Image (cartoon, rainbow, N blue to C red; front, side, top):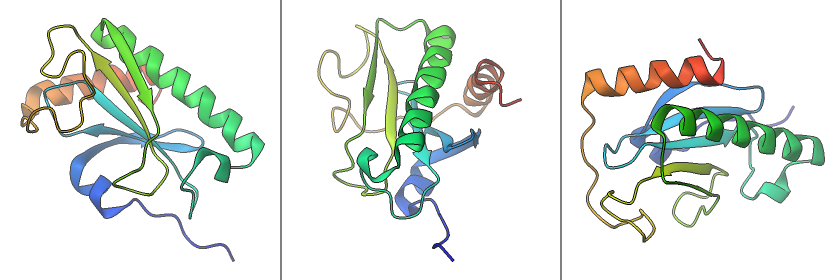
Length: 138
């Protein structure tokens, strides 16, 4: 029996769960500085995209595009940043970040630019509701 998948404790601590797509869990990062989502493929032991088989790799790309389009529709950003780094958290996860020229880190990467800003509960709930509808999770 293959090992069970679980979300890395750091990702659990730093995010709000939006729901599950066929392959990936969709999460919102707890940082009001940026509209920032994560996709985490529910595959135990996956660290790199190449750790997924070709079918799962294709599914991940489909889910990245679906979630990126939804984030773009909801936030109308100047640019989307999409990256799979994993230097701090080894579990495979893909960042999808809506960037604006007016954001706290522009044009640099968001990591470590400024301290995380607490989310307003009502604003984040409205944001999640909009995303769920666009991603077809509602």
